[in-house]
Length: 346
Image (cartoon, rainbow, N blue to C red; front, side):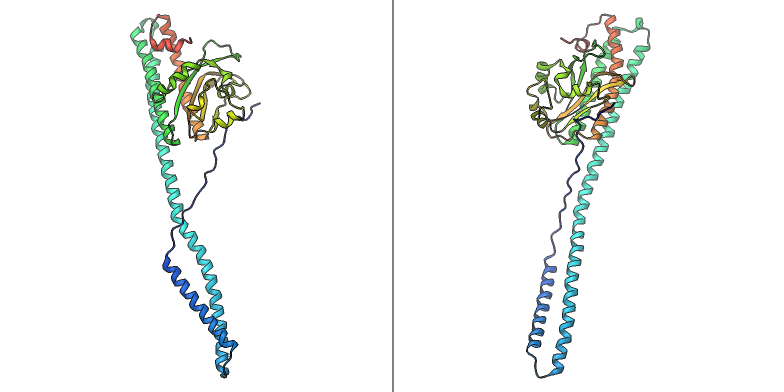
């Protein structure tokens, strides 16, 4: 039975704010003057009513006038309250418009970024797949060492473009420098092996240098040493992912593990999806993981998860074809640095 992922955080609803436009001071002056004049008039009428004169017609007129003024004052107060509320709502319109206009422009930028990033990724994947397919379909005896070395170098170039564009995209939408990582599982593991090793295979060029030492010190590591990988590989969570915008909070509550003791110096938020395919109802072939992390967060959203899964699916196909190229290169005893980096786990 499929279980919910306890490490998945939902996107929080943003707090809306409104900026009221400053009121016109002359409207307050006019209103205050009218109010003072009306109050003075009422006071005079009341005073003359309490101290009646000898002229009865005059007192009668004052009484009628007082009633009229009282009615006018009541209507004035009601009008002030009513139109004050209307003006308050009207003053919020520019703020609401500016807010939604800003949100619309931001979403438009994100949509353009998604389209551009997707186009670039699929463009390079198409070219890579075309190259690999021609080699795989060809007679192995007619495939030269130059062809295979060129294909291996092309795959490395493909990963550079994939990770670079993903890094730029996620950095744009989160307003923080993000790091993209491709991690692979050891190739010769048993299907039910719970002691599977995982290693960092590729990083985006922007963060490669500052993360290289950390990768060398704790890669490869056991899947169970990292909460993200152990959750994804747990058979109780089929086709699952890991997302968290506040890893230090999870760590303080003993809900997060990481083989790198200095992980918090590099990121506080992460999103990890498997590079995998479901082969049957209860089986899944996992090649590795695609992850993005940063400090500020904003990664644990459904749209980010879906987009990372989209790229991970393409990577699964690319790595599957690349394995065929590697196997063919090994049968020809080709020596290549990138080939060794892919096959060597020491």
